[in-house]
Image (cartoon, rainbow, N blue to C red; front, top):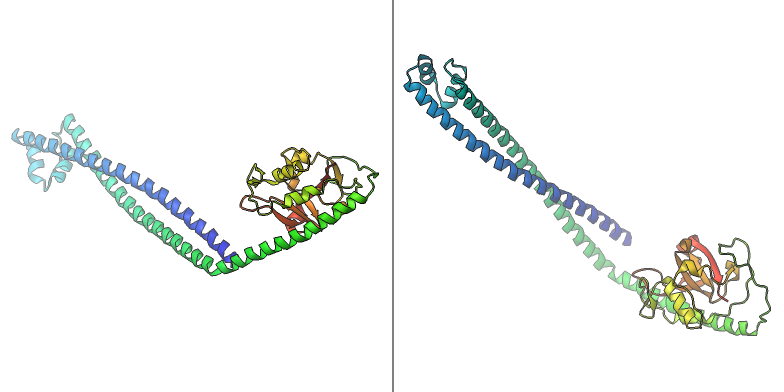
Length: 328
C-alpha cells in the first residue's frame, strides 16, 4: 500500500510538471498570437491604404488619356489584376513602382501573418488540450491518493501505535539497564587504564575508563516524544547534538552544540565496550545519540520525528556508524 502511495506521488509530480510546462508554452503562444494579430492588423491597414493610393493614381492615369493606361484599366478584371497589369505597363512611373512594391509587400505580410496565425491557433488548441489532460491527470491522481490514504489510515494508525508501544517497552528496559549499570559503576574501582584519545573511528578494541555519566542517558530518555527542532537544545525541541548537550548539562558537564566538536571530547570507545552515557556517532559525524545499553541509543533523528530509541544494528545506523566517545 505504501509503495502504491509512493508511485502515485511520483506520477502526480510528473503530471504537475507537464501541467506547468503546458502552461508556460500556452503563455508564450498567447503572447505570439497577440503580436501576430497586431502585425496582421497593421499589414491589412497598410495594404488598404496603398490600394487606395493606387486607385487614386489609376484615376489620374485614366483621365490623362494615355493609351497604355487605358489598356491597363479597361483590360483589368479586379483591382489586384489591375495592379499586376500596372506593374508591367510602360507608363508606370518610379512613384507608381514604389507604391506597387508596397502593395506587394503588405499583401505578402497579410498572407504570411494569416498563415502564422492559423498555425498558432492550432498550437494553442493542442496545448490547451494537453494542459487540460494534465489537469485531469492531477485531479485523478489526487483522488486515487486520497482513496488509498483512506484505505490505509487504519494501517498507519496501527503502525504508529505499534511504534509507540515499542518505544515504551524499550524505554522501560533501558531504564532498568541504566539503573543496574549505575549501581555497578559505583562499586567498581576507578583505577583503570585510560584509553587513547585519538579523534578517529576505532577499528580495534579500545579500553576506556568506566562511564561516570550514565545518568545523562536517563535524563535524555526523559525527553522521549519531544519533537525534533533544528538548532533546538531545550525540552521544547531538540536536534541531535542539542539533546546530548542538554542531557549532559543536567549532570554538570558542558558540551559544545556540535556533533563534530563533541566527537573530539572524552576518549574513544570500541563498539563492544559501550556503556550507558557514551556518545555514538553516525553519518560522517552528521548525527549522534546517547547509548543506553542493550545495543540501543536515544536520539533526536530528523525533522518530522521525535526523540526516540533506536537500535545500533538497524540498517542505516549500522551502515553509517562512525564510532563512540566516553565523556570523562
